[in-house]
Image 1 (cartoon, rainbow, N blue to C red):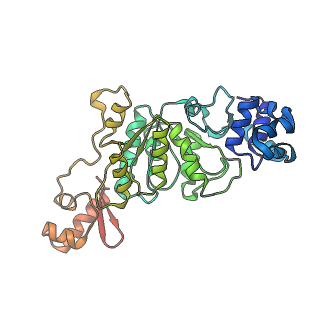
Image 2: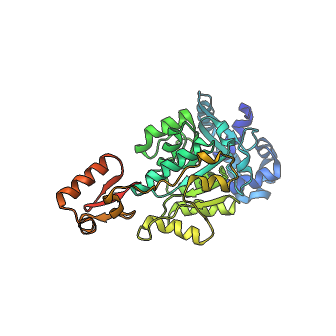
Length: 358
């Protein structure tokens, strides 16, 4: 990792408001290391990025620099710069790698072979179970599961990897010292202890909507492929999938019901050439991952012998529809549904509707 002096120069460059990533890259290409940029002076830097170069010398981010160095000196916290040997090689392959990464947890995980898993924040119960099952199986085979710590599919993917005793990375859209969303605070603490939380944004950066699509390029960039579990047609998950394609990564999508809004994004990806995935082995085989044939995960939708599950199918269904399909009395059907719900096979949805989970 960078020396304190070298790190301070990197932080100074990246903590000046108005000098964005593109300008930073132009300056680095022209002068080399950040300390050389500042040594070059006003006139030379102005010739590279125009009047914005004045900010390099008129704005003093020393307080933020010192705060960041102090933060990175604490156990389990580090800052990687583009010039560090420990900087993830996979991010050097993308068009706009972040110049600085703030990491809570194990920075070595950023060098591991990883698979990104993304999807809807408003996932169905079946989608959550699918994401967790796939992440568990893929992590058990040695893939580091990468996602964005959001509610829904992201959180399920992280949980699945942890449940397998595997590795997971959360790429977040706030400062690394922030916990967002609050409902995932406990999950974030576990990831920081057993995996890694990564951000390109300065410490203290609050929740800003523009930062979440921006961090998606890091999610895809750290991975060798992106698996989309559930996604609406205009979701951020499709941004990640598009970036993955532009970065030369594999794109996978799990199909769903034609009646489900959160399946339409996956169906669009498949139409555009994403690889349709039904089992974890589909992903592993496509990535050339060597695994024993008898350990391949079967589809999480293995049929059950329950007549109620058979009648329910794989789409949300109302009680009246189930009564008509099964021919059971209301009391008997409700009793069977309660048993299935307690066993984790069925979930009750708003509007007196039911969803099969396996």
